[in-house]
Amino acid sequence: MPDRALPLASPRRCVPRSPEAWASAVRTAVFVFVVAIPIVYAAWRLTGNDAWIEIFFRVPGALLLLGLAGTAFRLSVAVVRHFSSGEPLRAAWLLITGASGCDLAGTVCNNVLGSGSMLDPFRYLWRGPVPSWLGDAGLLASGSCRMALLAAGLFYGLRAYRRAGFPGRLAVSDRVLLAGVGLYLVREAWDTAVAIRHGASVTLVEVLQWPADPLLWMLLAEALLLFRCAQSMGKGRISRVWQAFSMGVFLLVVGDVGLWATAYGYLPWPWSSITWCIWVPAAAGFALAPAYQLEAIYRATQA
Amino acid sequence: MLIRYTDGELPAGSLERIGAHLERCSRCRLEQHRLKSRLAAAAGTVGMDPCSEPGKTLLDRVITATRGWDAARSAAPASESVKRQAAGKLSPLLGPRATRRILETVPENGDGLLPAVEPVLALFLGRRAAEEISGGIAKEVIVRIW
Image (tube, rainbow over all chains, first blue to last red):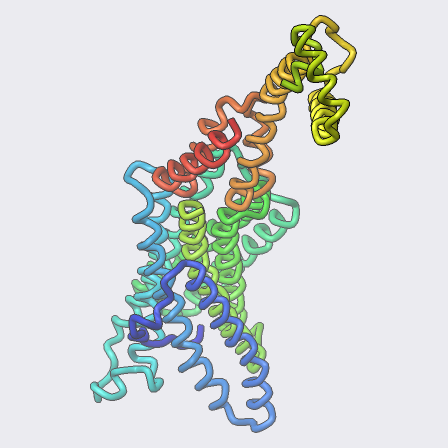
């Protein structure tokens, strides 16, 4: 996973006011980032200087990830306010907001504090070693905690579709994908078991992180179902919300598989760096979903 | 006066006087011609047979036919229009397939449109937003048409 960055203290006038503007800002930022990737890769290959890649992902990439996580959290909080207590999607958005908060905390802990990049305050303020619990806390927050909250939130979303009379059905391709990811989980568990048998030490944080991957599989199943539900309604503002979540979850799974492949040597350097590019569009999916939800509410009430 | 003259409703003396005036005055003849043309056109619009109901005056027949046409229009086509306009408002939000499926359950006379739509909107957008949209549909679509 690439390094992430500190939150930007944006001046108030620079903060988009309407949900459409938020969505547009997110799409533009991700577009610029994606367009810059081949340029940076070309510069890196031509000069042979790793700093191109390193600085690109550690500074602008990290800032973008942090901005997207902050946007997702801020907009999710705004969405919750539009639902009264007792409404099914209020529970969904409360859980999703919790997941966004965990992601934001994880992004700060893992990719800013102690990252060693120019965004890391410890680099300027603290001469000693960075406390290890920060990284552990970040891993737990953006791993098991976030996945569990998000899975519960998306479950409420699925329930809303069922209640509305639009239950989704998995297509054959979805089942194949789920089976493939299931096999990956089995393989990953097998690799972990082999590593432990060969004397690898396991920390408490690692054990607490074990549910993250099964939760990710569950999230993928929910995301695919939500995608099919949204498809059954046709192209509308409400569908876009849940399709954005589906896209985010799908890319999380791809990124996770990439991390595993890199860690176990299946994806050698420099190809492994491709997985770094996935986190930004994935984060964009989670930021766009609440933006689209707010857009739907605002358009509906102001029409 | 000209209508009543054209329908032959006036007393004999008045008929003669107006007839004599029309022979002399080209402007009044033109006005009578225009009047006849307009009444015939109105009868055609509302689907009235100009030769039917010979006992009634032309004006009475036009009024009767207009009322019948209006009653027929309000029976079916208006509800279709309510559904169509509601679909126009809901489709960008819910999606075309969902809108079609929800409106399928609404009877032809448009009754029960809001109770069918509001729970789905409330599920996805919240009760407050759903009430506002329903209010908008009621005001802009239903009230305007009926």
